[in-house]
Length: 316
Image 1 (spheres, rainbow, N blue to C red):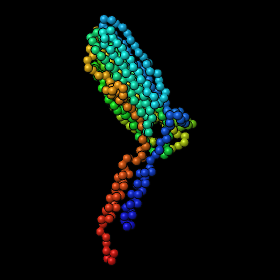
Image 2 (cartoon, rainbow, N blue to C red):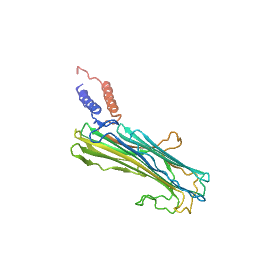
Image 3 (spheres, rainbow, N blue to C red):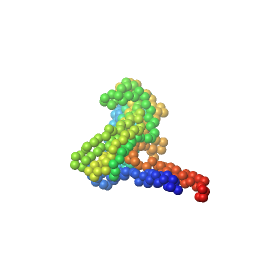
Image 4 (cartoon, one colour):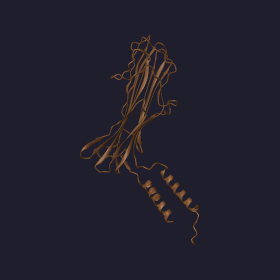
């Protein structure tokens, strides 16, 4: 019995540790005035959602900029829509959706854009530019000294036809401007800044930046339990998309056929499935789901083995 007790005691301690060891993060809420960081901040901008449209025989110009004003409600969604009808009977439409909200461990943005075209012929030229940005910020504190993992990542459908596209110029314009080109660019930013109530900003962790080729990343940092210390999680995602079906002089117009230019899933325009970008802070001593179950399973196994052990003759 003493041997079994010696085995079970550490197991019970592990169970207690698994259920108790876990640092709590205290997040601000939408209606709170939290320390020096203020309440959660959000800004949603659709600064470009249109462009220039030409017909070979009847040249004309159309431009739509800043269709959607910044939205301050962190749970709101901004939507922009533009449609252009050509003299030839062709048409183009541009839809943008952007929003964001709070999660149990940080922030989440949703963003989607779609360039739709119908019956564009050899005389219908288009230069479309899309620019959408969701920017979020939230403040938190830690109730314990602990390390934490800061994660950032985006998921969702990207079905945007690309051709002759390169974003390497300093001005942000594609290099191959003498031919029709189509393409998109995803940029994200996540950081955690450490503030002291009396001193202000005291630490700025290296940020996470993601792009078309990298959809997730993480880093670790130390959090402290101190009434004078708080942290600010900042997160933003930018989507840029361009479609030029002609050279700058419209000497070479490429007819758009079945090419798709979508970020997010637009199979059902009434309920678009957007690109989702999340930034989270996870304390490293948070129990791994299932760890308690494994410990209890081991405990049960030992008890079963104990019952199966042959009993010694008390007279021997």
